[in-house]
Image 1 (cartoon, one colour):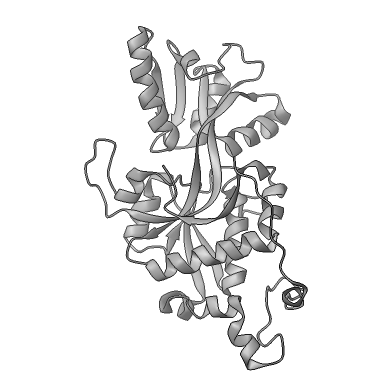
Image 2 (cartoon, rainbow, N blue to C red):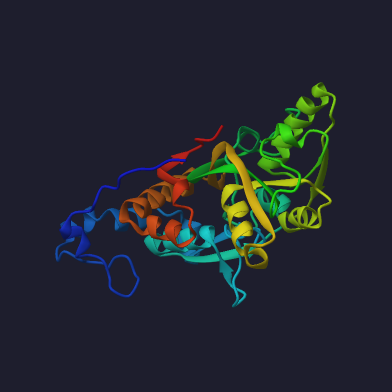
Length: 308
């Protein structure tokens, strides 16, 4: 996990903050030259015409992945990603519209131009950037990622860890549950080979949602599940008052979450990169991560295509 010290903005810049949640008021500073140098206003001027005209950034998210993306008690999008997205939207002066989308449809719907970007705990991995499957076959044009958070994979088990699972090798000879088309799906595919060589085959149960995978762990049908660290920790803390699951062992394969952008939308990609950087520098980013108890995953800055 990445930690960092945060540079503070000078006091003069702080005076440009609005008190009611808007990040900046046009004309703060009193002269046109100062306004012209205002980095936020300059950034807003670079927003692509489609989003600027609409005043909206449409984001595909699978709202079934607490605490990253889910529906709150009021039915509205909630979680780490919606909070970061809304904060970025304030910087850019854009309203954020979250389009609830099944995980496996996030990138296809992005390529179909049903949304502007996809943001849903998407790991920035080579296969997604290049648009290839695990066998190297081209399946789509690929995407660019604007990386904004670092997450490793955790093992989640029943409370008390009755099967004594602490490492991936402990899964050999057992059943593991994962959501398909995820980083965890790829991790267990490699572990299947390792367990096969040891003579203790690993059985993998794949599901179209993380909730279904966790249900198998809760029922004892699977010895363990694999999840992104924030999701595993949240499930362990909140499910049945913290009495259903626990996280075991160390995290593995830390990798950034990224906002997926179509390859040709470089202007939008670059604007989002600068907006995420602005959010990190402002200190608001740290507040969001602290709210969800995931400060250990803080990124030092926004990076384009920085994943493995």
